[in-house]
Amino acid sequence: MLDTRPFPIQGEGLRRKPYPYRPQRSMIPWWLAEVAYKGYSSAHGTRQSLKRLAERGGFGRAELVFYLGPMDRGVFWIEAAPDDHLPFPIKDGGTIPLWLAEIAWDHFEEKWPGATLEDMAERGGFTRLELVRLLNQPYWGT
Image (tube, rainbow, N blue to C red):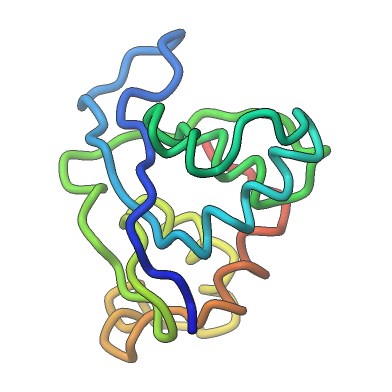
């Protein structure tokens, strides 16, 4: 069974660029944090456990997406919106914040022409496998 305990994602992000809105903290399921931790630990070692990362506030937004995806894509900026911390369903394990669902949708929408992210939510959200595959692609975001 998937571990759906909440894992924190920091709200403020990088401080080098002002947000039009102050990003709020959000949560992802622990199983998704474990996937990101594989990338984190390959880059930084295992001196800091996933549990300790959670205690210290979790991953930042860009950091999470970086460790979920190809390690050669670099760090980028993720824009914030007032309600982007709201939960989005994952069919087989918990929820993710809306901002992360929007990144995955950027890769998925061409496979479902005319559909919207809201349509995806109505069908129950992404599956765990879809989400991990979609996030493991180069990101061209803002």
